[in-house]
Length: 111
Length: 113
Image: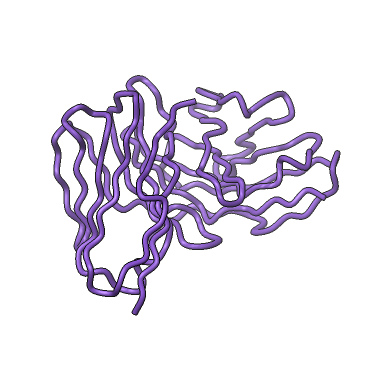
């Protein structure tokens, strides 16, 4: 299957710091999505990106769809304790209707 | 806000038994999905369903798996004869259109002993 690699695998940051994580693939995607998953729960959609180069914000979150269509990044500004969780990127291939998920970035925010 | 619901939240079954996992997608959505997540790993696509038939399935979705939309609201995943390696969280998702905007349910944790 498709391989979406996320980095870093995990992060430990102080409350108030900014966070940056990214997702890369060898394949071109039509859509990039970022999800957050809390323990024992389903992924919750944070941001959806539909065009190469698109930069979209949702509150303290900003994500960009890479120009090559093979990567995306997610930034979180001024982190707070409830930002703790696993962040997954997911992509939609041209012509497909199912998502391929990245390997995840586990974020820990230290108060 | 409308949400996808799943039952049960946790299912324990013995190897070889059949299980049915249930989902109620968001009511005006047309596309339905099952994904699974083995503990500590990424979410993996199993199957998509549209217009009362399977539209796509992964190599994980073998003959032991089947899906059904028995009425206008439920969407089920059946595993005919469970194996130990079927132990995972199973997520249902639904979508209004094909924009990639999938909403996930809270998941069913399946434990096969």
